[in-house]
Image 1: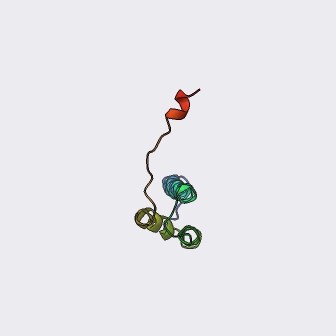
Image 2: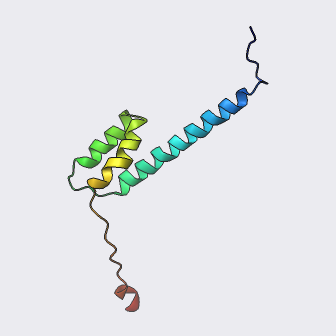
Image 3: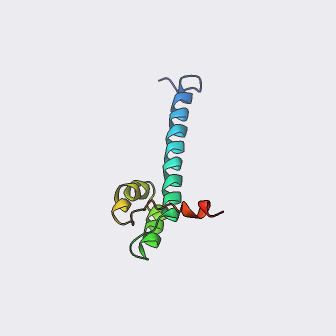
Length: 87
């Protein structure tokens, strides 16, 4: 019976695990920033999504990214160009 030694490709598994962890951390960070910047229709929804993101890892991130778009107010593009012209 042969044992696995460090020189037998173990670094590939470690690199793959690190890549998965980094990818998940990036998704989680994106979800948290999006949660903070977003306005929801009901006032309690932001707190609800925050608790879901914090306590249901890793499924909470994917639930938020898939389902929260339905509950947010749509952002409107309404620039105020007239204030620059008055200077």
